Structure formats: structure tokens, C-alpha cells
Image 1 (cartoon, rainbow, N blue to C red):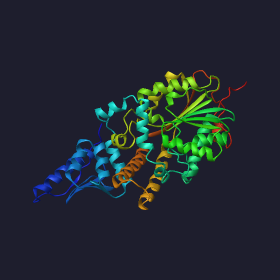
Image 2: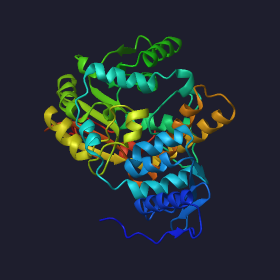
Image 3: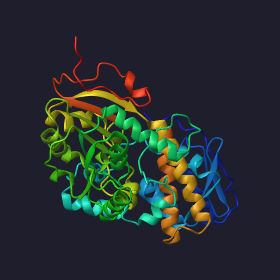
Image 4: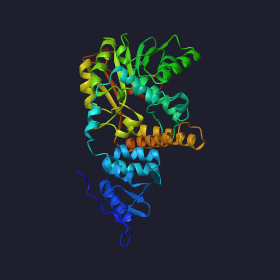
Length: 418
């Protein structure tokens, strides 16, 4: 049920020209639509304010207001990127107020239809190219030094982004209980940091798959420089091409791009490649508490084809077809909000220093994307799940979780002896 709207503060329109009366009417309609968002709305000399506004949305033209009345998710992002909406006040605070007002709906018909679409290998390559192949130099401006573009793990909120990303990789490796000499398959390896870390710090052999040509080239060159080419193989191919056997399977930040109708494909791939005795797997992904498509503007302009699943959808779509049993679930939502705050602050510094290329519309769109993503994790609109699982009936399920938090240790996936 929609929250009861607080009365909005309306500017007096008595004796004003017809144009300003129309502006005021549109602003009131928008304020009613957004209630009870703590925002002020302004067009020309007309203003309307919600309860205790934290920021002002200033519109450059009526078309921007009409767009928000018709389809606020898409039109807000486009109008902000075009400069037809300015935020007076803190952008994150304004977006948090807007999120709480707009995120409760089910999404439009086309949005729901897109979320159910099957993502073919060709479509997956196209989607990845539009986002990840913007140029390694662009991402190097605001990611950590190893170019990890996934949620970090902060042992302390005061930890640096660089340290938190290393701690995230160790957290994943400990959950998998990696042992020297084992083989690992990674699906969706980004710029290769985790694959190289697993080989270097845990003594395993890794075969890592990715459909981004730029990322694979970067990862191969880094492996060559670090003398790890013999232990890590970067394969430019879709996850559905995986055929080799492995001790552990890991995917960090790829499931969001698989597509709900392709979850069964992923489950079957993991099922055919994992060792029978001690095989285990980990999926790290952005998710939801209830089924709903990703923000329509982000999906159209920034992350084409992305869908954040619920735990139930992952269980029914990936685990059941693959013959797996859930072992452990952890939600790192606050860690992702803090990760994105680091990214956003670095991005803003790079923009202010003139180091971000592209045009102004691109720079504003990415500012909005990063700020909006931070807010989505702050408010609980999005979650960040790490799911660990093994074959149904496996005797090698960890006896306790103690080793996960002991330096140099990890979970034991060997069957306990009596």
C-alpha cells in the first residue's frame, strides 16, 4: 500500500500569468506522484515542496516534468544526463528520497518482459561490450589499482578500497577452501585480478572465461608480467563453452548478466565441470529481496541486459537443474554501498580534474549511475549475495565456518573423520 502523502507546500499562484500557473500545476502533479519524497520541485519562478526537503529538483523545461509523470525511471535519468534537470543539494540525498518514493512499484510491462528475455551468447557479448569495453583507461580512473569492478569486503569501514578488494578475494578463496594443486574455473573474470590472486596466493591452477576482448587482453598481459601465464589461462569465450573439470567453480559479478531464462544453462555447466568428490562452487551477485527488474534507465543506458535475481530464483534456476545443495549464504549489501562510495568519490575527482573523456552527457550519466547504485544498496533496494553450494549429498560439506575468519586458513571441504 502506498504511504499516506504528506501535504506539500505550494507556492501561491494568485494573480500569476497563465504560464506560471501551468508550471505550478505540473509541479503539484509531480509532487503528488512522488509523495512523500522529501524534495522541492522548481521550474522558473514556480516551486512546490514536499515535507522537509533535502534537495531541489530544478527543471529547465516542462518536457522534463512531463517525462517524469509518464515514466520516471527512464526519463529522470535521461533528463539529468541532458542537463534538463539539475540537483540543488547533495545528489545522493536527493536520490535516496526519490528511491524511497519510486522503488516500490512492479515496473512497467516492457521492463518485466525484458527481464524474462533469454540472453544468447551473441547478445551477451554485445551487452558486455557496451559496458565493459568503454576503455581500460576509463575504469582505471576510479577503480582500485587491480581493476576489481565488484563489491569489496571491508574488515573495517576505515579500510582502503585497495585493501578491501584484496580482503574480498581472500574471503572468496577461504569460502572455497582452495588448496595448492587444485584446479579452479572462473566464469566472468573481469580484468583477471581474482584469477591471478588465486594462483599466486593459493597455489591453484585457474581457467578464467570472459567475453570482453579488452578485459581478456589486459588480464593476459598482466599474467605475463607477473610470470603466471603457466598457471592462469584466460579464455575469451562464453561460460556455456566450459567443458573442463575443476575442483572449484567461482563467478563474481557475472550472474546479473546471465539472464533469468539462462540460469538452467549455468547450472548444467557447473554440474558437468565440478569434481564429484569435493567439488564446490561460489556465486557472488547483485540480487533482490523480491523479484523486480533492474532500474529501467540503468538497464537501457548503462547495463544492458542486467537482472538482479532473488535467492529463490537462483535456487530454482541454477541449483536445482545442476543438482546442487545450498551450503552458505552471506549478504554483503553494506559493503557494496561503501565500495560504490569510494568509486563515486574517485570518479568525481577525476571529472573535476578533467581526466574523464567522453562528452558531458556521458559524464553526468555515470555520475547518476554511481550515486543511484550507492543509494540502492543503502536503502536495501539491491542486495549483494555470496552463495556457496556443493553437490546434493556431498560428504565434503564444511563441518564449521571457523576457518573462514582465521588468517591463512579457509573452510575445509574434506569429509570429517570420526
